[in-house]
Length: 340
Ligand code: DAH
Image (cartoon, rainbow, N blue to C red):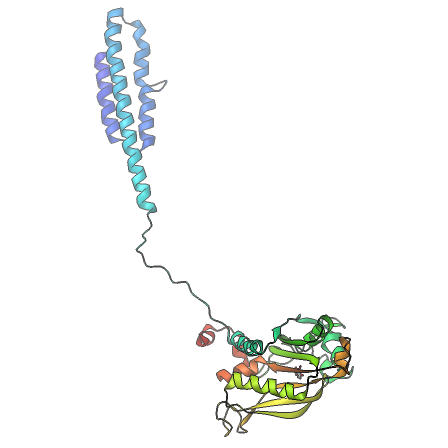
């Protein structure tokens, strides 16, 4: 029996030294010291021995047992340390590794243009208001003094959602909303998206952007309109820019005008950008029609105002020399990245 104990010990030493995981040492422990373990069986069988033999063998067996337990404990601790080190190694963060650059987007040229236009007006004391792209027919046409037979109301010109609701064809309905919600002095601009039933080509798109403007107060005159828009043109296109006001017609302004700026490319001599005329048309404007002021419940003997509206795409195409409006909507990064 003693020989058997010695063999178990030698065996255990060999197995423990080869164990390569804590699970393996646990298996060894169970196979030797567990309920059905080899050593446990021997200790159980000791009852058959004589008292002397039992004492001697018992001592040896206990020594073997505690030696095996010690070896298992040491091995398990050694493996625990190794496992921890391996874990540290696999989870290590190399702080010296160069970072991955985050890809930063760029502003869309139309956003840049709208922000530039807005900045100029904000510097002149205008605040920004917004209106919805889905509008009522009333706000888009009736309240703006467009009579029921106005050609712009035609199904072939305007996207109707119902008989009374449409995709706004201009930002001018924001004038109506502002007049109904604010009291003078009013001094606002409103950049936004508009929609018209146009077939896309180099200069037309069924979706485009405008910036609307509205000033209403006591004693506002055509001189305020001309001074404000002349100053705007000089700030946007350069201080040597000249402006020209040509009579025009809009239902919601009286008198109405279109504004041309001297060509910022050739200075007025005539070139490809201004099609040889030296002038470039940039916006429509006028003194707010009394019928529009009445929508806001204003006393038209006391209050007057001016309004204007410009196409953002047109300004951006002129400023950046973009020859096809469709380039703005294709989202080709080779195009957009040029405006970094
Ligand atoms: N809404 C007009 C258009 O889309 C532009 C316009 C002209 C706006 C004159 C105005 C204005 O506020 O006074 O063609």
